[in-house]
Length: 114
Ligand SMILES: [Zn+2]
Image (cartoon, rainbow, N blue to C red; front, side, top):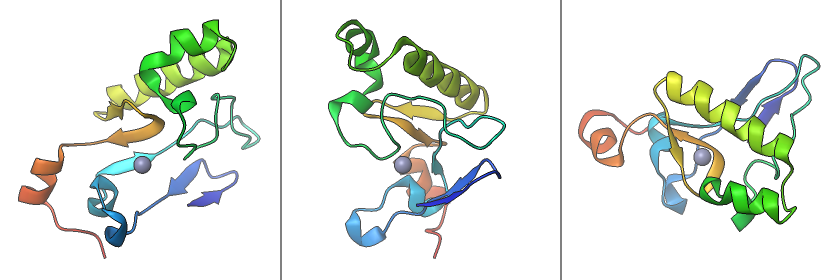
C-alpha cells in the first residue's frame, strides 16, 4: 500500500494472484482518516491488521473490554458514515475496507484494472 502523507490519499490494488477482489476492479478502497497534519486518527488498529480487533461488528465489546478506545470507535463510525454517504458499503472484518458494488456486479460489468 502506498501512503502519501499530506495528500489524504491512499492507493491500493490487490494482487489477482492472491484471490483478487473488488480492489482489482477499482471498486473497493482501503481508507482511514488523517488530521490536518496528515497524521492518522486513532482507529484501534493499523490498516490491514487482520485481527478480530479490526471487526466492525464487535466494536462495543472491544471498547468494553478496553481493546480499542472510545475515540477509535467514534472515528470508525465517522469513517463509515462518510463512506456510506458516498455510496460505499462496509466489510464486517476490516474497518478500513469499503466496497462500491458487489462482486457479481463487478464481474458482469467491469474489467480488472491492469
Ligand atoms: Zn481492502
